[in-house]
Length: 136
Image 1 (cartoon, rainbow, N blue to C red):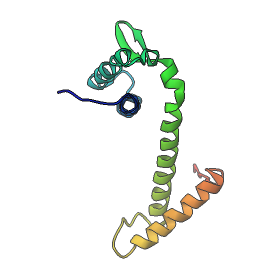
Image 2 (tube, rainbow, N blue to C red):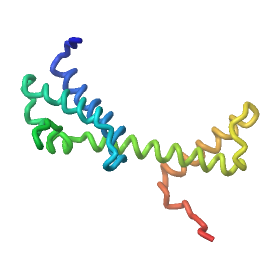
Image 3 (cartoon, rainbow, N blue to C red):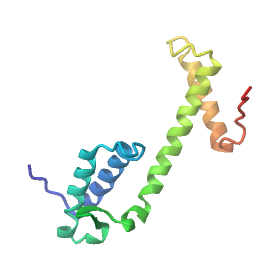
C-alpha cells in the first residue's frame, strides 16, 4: 500500500498515531500491545525523509517520538480529552445513582439528561470541590 500525504497531513498523522498508541498502551504497564508500538515506530521512521527528524529519537535501535515531540503540546490535548471524559462519566454515573440506577428508559431519558447537565454545570464551575464521599 502506498499513501501520499502533504507535509502538513503527515505531521497531523504523527499526532494521531501518538495519541492512538497512548490510548492503547499508556495504562498497560508491561503488558503493552507491541503491534501498536511497532506501528508507531514505523510511522515515526518516516520523519527523517520528511525533514522532521527532530521529532524522533532512537532508543535501543527503535525509532520513537522524541521528547521534543512529546513536550510539544500533545499531552495537553490528551489531558483536555481526559478531563472532559472524566467529568462526563462522573456526571452520568452520579445522575444514574440519583435515579436509583434505573437505567435509561424512554420515560426517564430527559430527566437523566437534565441531571447530567446540572452535574456538568457544577463541575464546570467548581470542579470536584463540592463532591464529598462518605466512607462509612
